[in-house]
Length: 489
Image 1 (cartoon, helix red, strand yellow):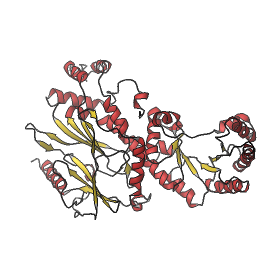
Image 2: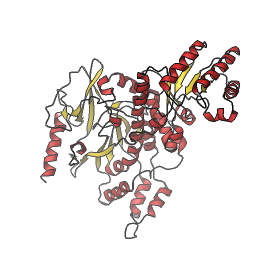
Image 3: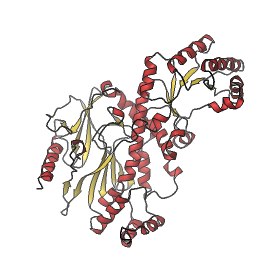
Image 4: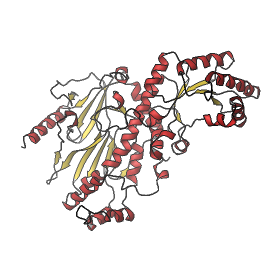
């Protein structure tokens, strides 16, 4: 089963990167360091939307990208046209020849797609020749950042809907083909039950849904005539959009046609509300449909919805059965970027020994974590109670004490737990894909992880931070490296 990328883009994507990745690669090559082994980690610093978690997504497209990573003759020819500030060729011809023959040989470890992830812990760990690892920074961030953001937004919307189906309706407002397909995929992982995006349905096997728009009613001029015409054309797919002119009058017209459908052996699927006071209109529509003998007809609501508006409508006692969410889901309207980063954790020195690397900052949240990192998840009675970031070369110190990353002077603590799980598993081994994520499995994983997360962390207002920190070894090594760097030892 394809996950879409190969069917949408036929050409090379090796140049889907920032120029500075290539200039650094040229520097590694010229310095004789191109094959030096290194480890990078892809993480984020804050959960999106002011929430308490994120859902890892985008791994399958990322692996597809890696699987087809090659510099074509056309790619290399283009790079050969670039010049520096002195109008000389930017890249050495022999470096370009090196790129032309380059075959990816990295190992990628990742959390299972659909997993809950939290600040500072690796979503991906990339290990291999430093030149190759460096070239992958931008495309991996591009592919993981966006889908993780949208999967998280979808999960929040689904949580607000309290079990009512949520349909992703955002293609027309998405940022292009990538944005539309990526958002449909990620929203499905996050818990949406379907999409209006037919290409996503074809490529990804996501259920598709939709009936008609306002233009159908406007074209026919008369709402009742429009509903009758649609019922004649597609009698088994009748969810009428009732607010083109007057919403409650539209419900009455839908009921008239519903009775005519029933007389012909068909049933009205439902109605859709796309404007106005959705709490009031849904309860009135429910009363009218019930009194007319259509208690099974569903009420779908749309109209620039997000988790906060859905929560408010729910609190007002609405009778909405399912929600169509578009713009504010697929564009991550209130936070347009996840802010993921890709940092060097360790590299081999001239003697082949591992050397931990660290990036400092005046802001503690931006100081990177050194080592070859793994994440150990702790559970108690099935509930997620904390994550420990440790160096896989040293193992996790026992007991699994969590040292705060953002406040390193806080005493460490050990969450009571009865089960542990290491999250990062190998999905690509030295350039060969070992495990391709399955969309349905990712969706199930997200649902299971969310069910195991405390409601205090899932709440929208002031969520309780989920415990994540360093084990003792990484904590001590980090403080040592900070001291050395700041005192130039």
